[in-house]
Every structure is written in structure tokens, then in C-alpha cells.
Length: 180
Image (cartoon, rainbow, N blue to C red; front, side, top):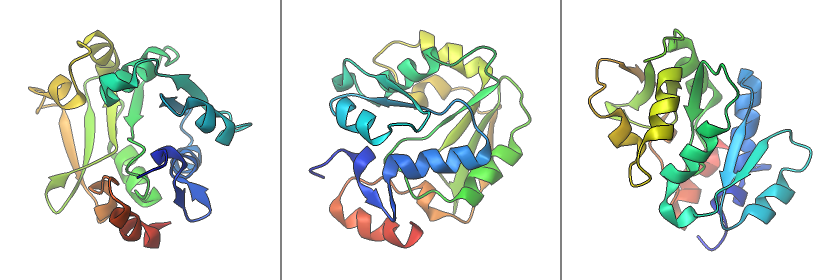
């Protein structure tokens, strides 16, 4: 993409600032972001935002390493955590509210949005998953950690196809611009 995804524009915001604003409106606290290679630029863009920005010293290990850093910083007792990749910036506030509304606070619960039967992001995880993510090998990923937990996964149908769109190519920016 030629630029850090977190700092790409979406309407009047960057990807990351739009996601942060959505979670602030939901009342989620704390809001945590993890950055690697572009840490300084992202930190500068978040000045006075109140977001806890953490550095991933080894981003080449992949996104799961950033997730592990984030969950290790959660204050106890954390009841649950949204996992929202920055490359899914156009998820609607309505979808986030639907996900949160489905959550009962059970420690084993996993809430996963679906659009036309396909699972997407973000997911909402109960507190038991926090320790499982922390203890997982660095070579793991969220899908592997959740594998075998189908009884705990609650699929929440939404009308928002943006839960599926992982922005990886310039053409994807055209797809999300109407959702800014």
C-alpha cells in the first residue's frame, strides 16, 4: 500500500482513528493499539487520544505477536476484549453494537460476526481467551487458539459486508470509501 495501514485515510479520519472513535462511542476502555515498524508515526497521530499505544519490537513475527502484546497489557479484571485488525476499518458502528449486544459476559464466550454465512472481524472474546492467547506459542494465530471451541463461538449475522473486507490493495480503498 506504500503507507502504514493505520494511517491511511478513511473519510476525515485515519483507519486507526476511525476504529478508535467507534470503540469510544461503544464505551470500551481501555482502547489499546499495537504498532511495529511505524510506531513513531502512529504515536504522533494519536497524540492526546488517550489510547494506550504499545510497541511490537518484532512485528515480523506477525499479527498474533501484536495481539499477545495487547492482551498482556489489559488491566485486571478484564471481562472481554474486542480483537479488531486495523485493515478492517470500515466496520459499521451498528455491527459493533450487534456484536456487543450478543455478549453475555461469559468467560468462554466468543462472538464472531458473519455476513452471508462468512465469518469476519472484529471478534469479541471472553476473559478466558486472554490467558489462552498469552500462553499460545508465538507461531500460533487466533484461529488456532480458537480451534476446538465451536461450542463457545456465537455467530452473529450482520448486514455489514465490511466485516469481511481486509484492506490489502489500493482497489480495496475504493470499496471502503462509501463507508467512511
